[in-house]
Image (cartoon, helix red, strand yellow):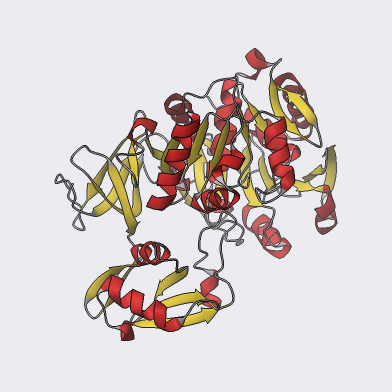
Length: 467
């Protein structure tokens, strides 16, 4: 059984709110879903171009309720890359913004939903994996054909766990702070819809006045974001984002700075708001762990403990379980929310469950004497200079604490350090050498106009290859 099967019991409650559609009840969503159902048969393969609008969310809900499989493609993906994905995956249907319809004019138009169109391709349905539910991108809007295969069970289990540990109720209201195609935002949508809560759907960014008007008008109860978003909250002024309805802040998508955490915790205590730090990967559908609010101050920097009905542990390089607190190794996670594996095209969609419920995260971590876990960096973000292993993530974090925004990449003999033009090269080199204890000649500094970032504010290391 998948999610979104309980809409009828919440039929009179508001599911989605937006400037375009107004308030849509769960009953109205069911009706829209049934209309789409007439155009898209069960178990279809649907490529959905995602943006923060009601139409694509309704298309997604309909697909899940109708036992179809959804390929998530971010709106910022280049048209030629989307066409390549269509060629690689052979979707039977497309859900596209009406304004982009001209690029897909060769396909048969079946239905209009607000500012979206549903199109029929000429591909035949070759899906045989009855448990497959969605395909989430591994590289945002880069157009890579690599997707994470997530099953109905993965979605159901992770949704259930998140609802349980965040204690999400039907009287709550979330707002879209991140792209719909990002696994963190998708999990927020899934959990709130599953309990009969509301979601304010806005395509305004948190830097725009319109976002905050919709946030206040709709009495939003929770705000969520990655570290980059919390940096913006701080710049805007935490007091300025407070409204009486706000109950909880959640954070995931990377390690948040200690000083930032302290400011947020102080703000939350002042206004009696909970701040929940979480950790996850798309490959885990996506949540893995969370830190309870009562430990926020004493365990700053921790990702907490594993979510309900799952376990995690640390392994050494030789695959042995680490039992001593403080020793760093790879974080391993076990749970029913672990994805089936990856796909690079239509032929991979019928593959078996390759992970079998166990995920090697690729993250280096340790646990303390109280069994709280801490991420130290990525396993593949380790460089070696002068025979010494250097954690590139740790360099970036420590440099940022000194107000230097840099991006590091391993170039086998040296560490390439990208920095923006306004920074001084000699100061960067001095601090790099001091932090790492390595000679300055181990670093190659590269001056660029702006450090490229993904749609959720993380450093885009793939694009750094162009420099």
